[in-house]
Amino acid sequence: MIQPVVAIHGGAGTMSRASISPEQEREYLDALNQILAAAQAVLARGGSALDAVTEAVTRLEDCPLFNAGHGAVYTSAGTHELDASIMDGATLRSGAIANVNCVRNPVLAARCVMENSKHVFFVGQGAEAFAREQGLEIVDPSYFSTPARYEQLLRVQREQPGAAVLDHDGQAMVAGMQPAAAPIDPDRKFGTVGAVALDAQGNLAAATSTGGVTNKQVGRVGDAPLIGAGCYASNATCAVSTTGTGEMFIRMVASYDVAAQMEYRGATLEEAAHSVVHDKLPRIGGKGGLIAVDGQGNVSLTFNTEGMYRGHARVGEAPVAAIYR
Ligand code: ASP
Image 1 (tube, rainbow, N blue to C red):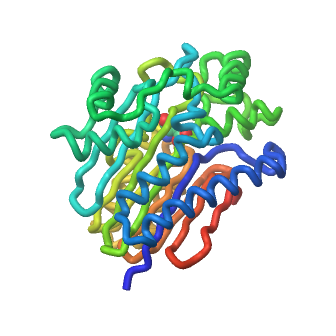
Image 2: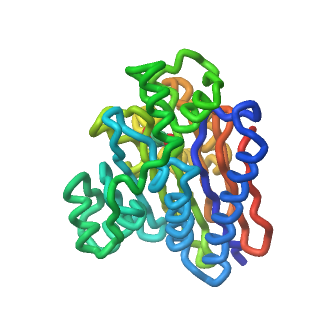
């Protein structure tokens, strides 16, 4: 008898009790718990893993605390460029979009690409036109803007003009706390959201969505919309969603590597996730973490940064959310 489970993340980075007030901490934990409960409810009424991750990521995109959808970070030009992906572990169908700035919920556009097109990946204007055709909600780009993220951009541009900074590292800066290795280097920058789930039928799914990294160069795309890098799901192994220095996650094909280690060397989910996050990514300077679930309902929430907004919820049990190590 399968006990369905969903896990989510809201990004990893420099986050310590010193940079987050008790009120902010409460706000983050409440948001994570509410989103977990909503996705858990989908699974509890017999919904699919695909529907559960769609529900979770849509809500994470709508929540301004996280760097995806409303509350996305800014490019160096003061604009937003959003990326998202989704994958169905039962069929290996997948969909992704990159570099859009008018689709309210990028994960829904990714899902439409998967279900209603014969392609996997749309970018830029073509992705936006496709989303319009699909009848998805279109918003003015200012919808994604929040004062907190703008302040982050100005701060990064003032203090480290050439750098692109992970969302939660940027927040730590605004709070007056230098991310551990000051000055900020271009490799320290995350805040993406994601979800993975196992449903009662034994199917796995994953989804990831992001505004990218603060002060990124216009046109830059990270790992989040790349199947195998920022998102992967196969019923044969596991479902994975990542957050962190996207360039390194792409080079390490991070999500797929978790699945490959399980398939090729018989690693457990935890062993494979640990190897990618604590061994392979650090070798090339990769910082961040991932969430993963396998067909037995094992869950891994692993990161090599100070913290990662994260949580999981099994059907029939209370959701569990956490921020720090
Ligand atoms: N991985 C994302 C990117 O590189 C950033 C993040 O995780 O916050 O675009």
